Image (cartoon, rainbow, N blue to C red; front, top):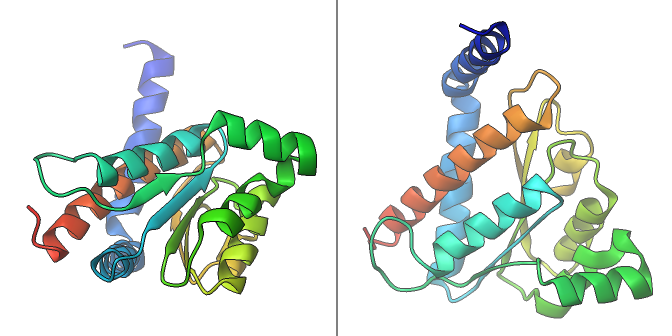
Length: 192
């Protein structure tokens, strides 16, 4: 086996043991899904944001909720702050640090939930979005890695996945959490 492939697989295995063995993380996954399901059941929405690969994860969560996951069911109110026209307008006029904050100001309403994804936990635009969301009485769920940087102090609940210093390993766990959330939300709403 190629040594690069061997090292990557060994790292994945080590981190998987940490991930699945973290009882607090598993409880956090369930709690976050409960918060989202309760918001959706009450007629509110899920708003997601992230940068780069985390933006892709935010979009993935929103489309699986609003579209479908494994089977047909009613659409669930979810959106990712990912529209290129909006992002470039807000970035050009107010700076990139304000793009998600501005999106929350435009779309966020009491009872909604913000899913803020940042592998470092230190992205200024994510932290500003969290601050705006909390000022509007949205619940904030963070998804980060390692010690979470500043994100845990800006969120009501922040899930921290294991990492060995690279965003790609964290993102691999983030997508697993997203799929677990959707399955749990559908179960709680009796949609699956």
